[in-house]
Image (tube, rainbow, N blue to C red; front, side):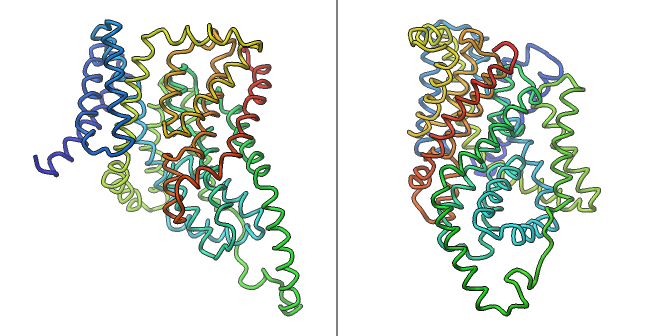
Length: 470
């Protein structure tokens, strides 16, 4: 089989999964379930030869162990199809959500962001906070693509001695986006499996995003203090060198405001999702898919930049989508594995085990979930595996929490685990950009993850008092 034909087959079968899933959501036709499950299995088998290393072994393990569990439990054919289709929402999301990032790359917006960074990030502390916030905001729409965008803006000017702090800021900014972005796999899996709307948990996960800034500041405060002292000394020296009539930042001053057009687009995209969620009785994934087609196209048309949209669409099909095939295959295999785990009665065993701990079961379960997700991430297991198992196998009421509490717990655990995982896309991308070993990139965030884990458990205890049913 020629490479061209094989590539066409791969794209066709993955797009077919998304099409059948969307049709099933719109029509409710039960006979589409076997077709969807069969397409998932066919896609995994077709894409598996492209995998390498840990991803390949994880995929094989998930499929093999999952199949063994299903056979041992004597699962019928419908249960096999249901297990195979657990994470089809991820495939659909990967095909459509990146389209939201097309208008962000409009040349006028990119230039304006560069000017904003040059004008606003005068101090090193402001630089780090600005980098983390900007990565978080752009990451919501660009996913991991936000990392090289912000990195390029920061390093447009030399930043001696700041490499590790900047890497941490970018990494933690992306973690903040995981907490609340409606376009990420984490949000899609958790809200769909728990039957929640994005708006119902948005206030709580935005609180998590704010806490991530605080945790990052706590971790970096000593280094920031040292950098501040060096900066003050440098400023003092420059004031004696420069003419008194000219301040260091007056020459060639640039506009300081955040690009209004870009800000308006980001706010508009969020409002559209919030309004549709309230007005249209469809799963969040469906709303995102429709919005991802219409909103960026309408925005580019209004800006008379239809060519940018067409080029972005071509880039997505030819470059972005093929680059996501590894994650798509792994996530589908992980979904099947978690579906198989769900048939073993795992959900009832966990509460029974935690009842022996002399603490409120809600606190004990929170600590257990954070430790499980973060601990497995440290050894290279993607958070999607434990999160999918927990979301699909644990009844929140059995551990004394509400569905909203459970969702915030899982999103928080996923987000804090990402910076410490040696196999996360962000750590590997930053390792390449900064020419450092990926394990060093992950190790630099251990303290952040530790502080964030403690804050998460305390925050959840407070949230438990505010959310009905907890």
